[in-house]
Length: 202
Image 1 (spheres, rainbow, N blue to C red):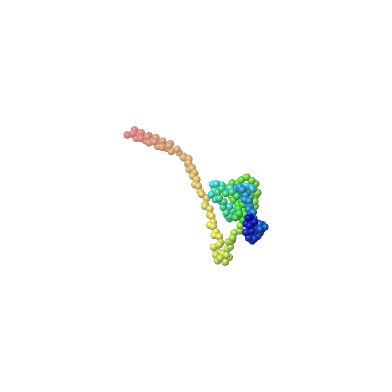
Image 2 (cartoon, rainbow, N blue to C red):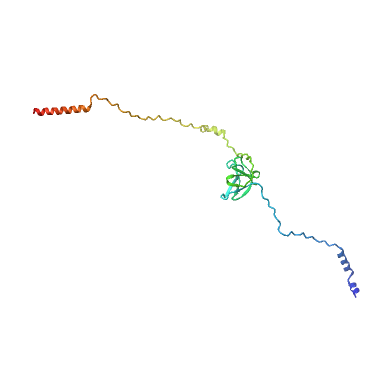
């Protein structure tokens, strides 16, 4: 009975089954997924750092250690920290790492920031930038208005005459030859004697 069932299977089917068993199967290997969290590597900058004081909203950073000789190249915000690279000879300015500054550095005024402990070398400041244009006087224009270019002489100073302070002198007292009081007394005596003699005669 079993032999009769196998006889009913066509020969082609047996051939296909045999080929399927002989052909090797390719399997795709699945990469093992890591379990747990992958730690991230964060780098901590080495060396001293400068931090903007909390009472300042924003400060400028400059291309060199002077806010009048060098142009501003950026800003730092309140509480922002950047690496410090050096300081000026007078210790009033600190050179910081600033990517948008010239050569990747900039300068910040020291009283505006706090400095963490660490060694800062003294750095030579960069050369001051040359002005884009220099003023040149047109010689033709100067010749046309030469009289206006001459300096106007200032008026000469004439000193005031010395102040004369009047001085008062005591008048010299004349020495009287005869006392005035004695003369009046003699006249009075003569008048009395005259009056008495007149009364006697009358």
